[in-house]
Image (cartoon, rainbow, N blue to C red):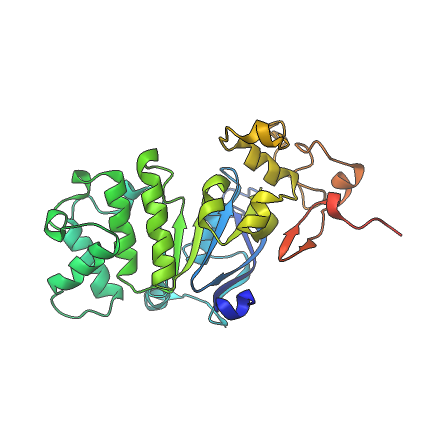
Length: 329
């Protein structure tokens, strides 16, 4: 069955572009952070955006959450263009689209108890008026596998572990009953031993609550967690497709580099290509030419002359790379 019928579309980002700086910063030229990124989020479906630090993943997350204004492009929720102007518009949008940040220790106010944080979320976005019933708070914590509730509600953030705090942050997001949940590197600051539990929790929420899930993460974890993987390099999407296709048959040399960089004791036995980690220190490149050319062992003259177009590889798998361009007649 086609993806469009199995997983209905909830949110669409069209040609998102974001520049920071410009004339407001002492006449400096704008700094491009995201360049022409398009993606679709569907109910019960997880999209993972992967790439190195600084590639623009978190900026895309904040653009979708409407925390940053877009320079170009648009975000559509159920087909309608989103324009959150003022407090009321932002509040209505937040009831549909929630974000969980990377650092759980900075996400919650250290001066307030867990009860206060969850109660405020229920009143602002959960449609609760008047006193909040204790059962509602217990239900929120139960949905993120924290219990018994009385052991957590009266505690302050510093009295909980990182994993517990991230579960509270997820519970606070669920209080709004969102349709889209954005998770920006939700386990990168947690101990390795508890990361899998958070990822399993997000996977269960996606499935049981029919959430459209957008998550930025490393490609090794995304392989087992996401339905679709998009690979981002220096603000631009360079490859995309199902998690199985992208991780088992990577088409772009940068994707192969990411896979080769992930710890894997069986890699030598499989004979997978390993690309050299050559850092590009030449500054931001212009739109002309492939942005990965200076690091790519397969670079050709055409790679520095013009940018590769998106090439369809079949089954929804695509890549921007001249290695897969059809041969000229």
